[in-house]
Length: 214
Image (cartoon, rainbow, N blue to C red):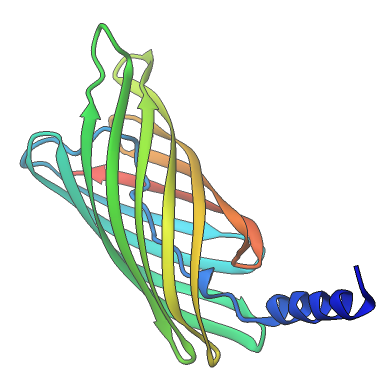
């Protein structure tokens, strides 16, 4: 390999590293297992999400009007640590989830497919993200009426936007590992979002919160 080719590759690598990351915006997710909300059911959730470069709060309303299908609306605020100073962004999104495998006596696992859209915006930040995905979960009884429901999912995220004057398209595979603790009072949630190396200048995002059926 010639010295000229090495120089060109080095310049490209440095240039890419200095680009603001459009994938700082997340498709905000369902913060729940594969099991959908029951027909005519409703669920409200509140969540705190954080990593080494973001701190935010999110609310969600989930509804269902058809067996095995539910949809959600998410909204909140986040403080992002960007290359040219911190920004407070507004986040909102929506998603639909359809159960394709129902948990029962013969099969303890539930599985669902989903599609989501998310928008993140503020001064010098405007990102639109689309993400189809899937999630699998299983419920374990803890005694009485309490259950713990571990789940795992993945999304193919397509992002387009502008961050601090730089336009960019982005594609990434994102994973999430979590669990719901279902108690008579609420369904408490812990979720670890496993992000590509260029998301939020980090590799992960932690979400904690609670889902409240009503």
